[in-house]
Amino acid sequence: MPRHFLRDDDLTPAEQHDVLELAMAFREDRTVRTPLAGPQGVALLFDKPTLRTQLSFSTGIAEMGGFPVVVDGRLAQVGERESVTDVTRVLDRQVAAIVWRTYGQHRLEEMAAVSRVPVVNALTDDFHPCQLLADLVTIAQHRGGLSALPGQRLVYVGDAANNMAVSYLLAGATAGLHVVVCGPDGYLPTDDVVDRAGRIAATTGGSVAVTTDAEAAVAGADVVVTDTWVSMGDEDSAAQRVADLLPYQVTAELMARAKDDAIFLHCLPAYRGKEVAAEVIDGPRSVVWDEAENRLHAQKAVLTFLLEQG
Image 1 (cartoon, rainbow, N blue to C red):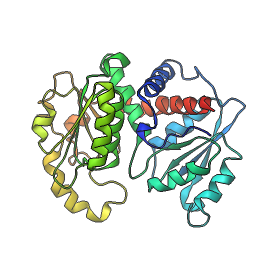
Image 2 (cartoon, rainbow, N blue to C red):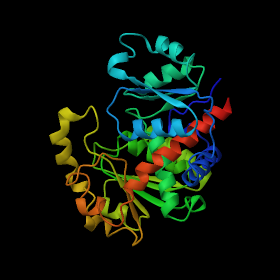
Image 3 (cartoon, rainbow, N blue to C red):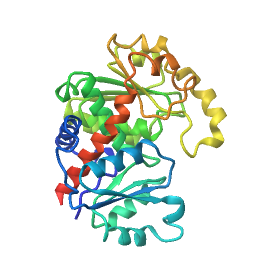
Image 4 (cartoon, rainbow, N blue to C red):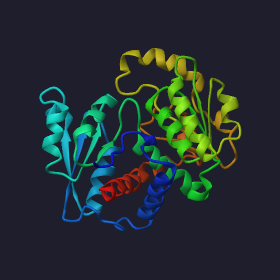
C-alpha cells in the first residue's frame, strides 16, 4: 500500500525530521533529487482557489524530473459528475501521485482508501499539512536550523478553530515546539485535536496550550502567526467574524510583546488591516515571502519521501 499524507500527524517525529532535512537540502540545490525522472506525471486537483499551492507543486514536480497534470475541479466535478472512487481509479493508472486541494477531509480519505499511488493533502477544511512543513522549514531557516526547532515558542493568534490552527497544533507538537493557539470563545479548537496534539507533544518534549488572552500568549514568543479570518466557505458570516476577531489583530503593539528577534508568519493571502497590520506583515520581522517560497522545497521533500516509501 502507498504512503499518503492526509494530515500532519501522518508523519512520525522522525519522519517529519527527515522530510524537513530533505526540504533544507532542496533549498540549497533545487534538483538534488529527481524521483520523477522519466518523466512521470503528478495529478494536481484543485476544487478551491489557489496560487501558492498550484505554483509550488507545478514548479517542484518539474524540478523533480516530472510534469504536473493540473485538473480543474470545476470541470472534473469530483464526487458529482463521477464518484471519488471512479476518478481515483482513472488517475492512479496514469500518474505517480495525486495532490488534491478540496473541501471535506472525508473526500481525501475516500480517495486514499482506493488509490494505488500516494495521495497528498494540499488543503482541506480540516488540515493544511503541506503549509506546516513549509512553515517549519521557515522557522528553522530563521531560528538556528532544524536542531533549534524543539523548544521554540510558536503562538498562533486569530481563528484558532480553523485548519491552520489545527495543523500548527499537530505539526508543531510533532516537531517539539511549544505551541499556543489563541482566539476568542467560539473560535477555539476541539478537545480531541488538543488532546491528540498533547499526546504527541508528550513524546517530543513540546507542549500545547489554548487561550483567549492574546497579550499573555504572545509574551516571549519566538514565532507569531496568524491567518485570514474569513476562510473559503465562510464568506456569508464575514462581518460577524471580523467583529469577533478584531481584538486579535496582530499589531505592532502585540508583536512588541514577543521576543526582540521573533519572526512573523502568515500563509497568505493576507488582508492588511484585518488579521494583521500592514506595518507587521511588511516590516522587518515578517518572513512571509521566505515562507511562500518554502512551500516549493517542503512539497518536493514530502513527495520524494512518499514516492520512496513505495
